Length: 228
Length: 228
Image 1 (cartoon, rainbow over the protein chains, first blue to last red):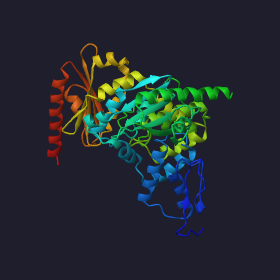
Image 2: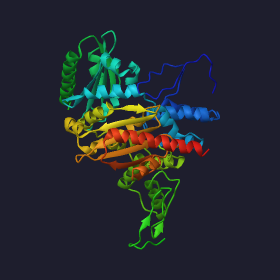
Image 3: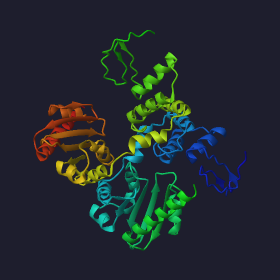
């Protein structure tokens, strides 16, 4: 196989891949691009040193949500066994990736979780500029907060409102129920994303948005019912 | 191999196993008792049905903390690949185990995290009877809260105070630093446990306990320094 150095190589594992590259290597069964890269490197006979192995393992851990997403397969575990055999310390990696929160971000998490309310199986949480100031955390430290909300057993979806300093509201939508496509909700508000994770931006108030989102959820559920 | 049905079979993977059984099968390299059982069942030619495979996978997921503890090995991943091949859905299992919190327990978590403070690299959090009442959560729903605290990057240990309805304080001690043995701290207060996870009970106030625990940490650290 010869690759021209100017070629664009498209190598994602996403189902929606549009084959935009000069060379397209797409494995829709793969857990992650890292898993594909592992295969390519082996096929090309490239020696996997410790650093490469750690990078591949990092990609697999994060893209499978610590082996908890649907993309976790027999193959994923086999690749990890090989990486482990090559010296990758999965424990240290996991700790490095997930256990680096600041005390300020834990305070911010506490503020955000205190706003939680569940309406019709949808959990809503809010992050305001005031919380950021009071906690002392950076705005980017709210990354992943929505996952704490998704851990609630009885909900089907989660909505996370984040107020920016210019007053804009960033809305993250998550779905735990495979029959609820939040990308369709987001598109109503000119946003987008995936079926289980999508988002949009707005200058309306959180209260207004909450009501509009609830109606949007009701509408797509009604449509789903009709299609039976 | 013949096993008398009255035999006690000791099969843990703990280093401290005292070989108390009539038959002792101990694999100190194994991630979990489940991993040992997998080996035994295969050696005995017992057919692993879906239910057995799910039970073994559950043991491995929980005992390795979702593949993030030091006991996660190449062998662990190989066993999981086999279980996955036999039809175990690791994603569903992980969600079933970890994503079943009640909204009340999320509220309680918010209250507990709001009490966080860090003194000399030790994070302290509190759970009071009042928080339990105000959140509406059951007392047992605080299981695992201490892990949120351990996710803070800069701390070496965590102390979790839980007030019981009779006024007693349950103290959980955790260590992220392998050189700090919290079992030694717990033993000062007539408690016990493991080097990284230990605990004790007391009728003193949280404030008094906080001071005494800080002194205990300083003492074991000083002793450690002297032994060099």
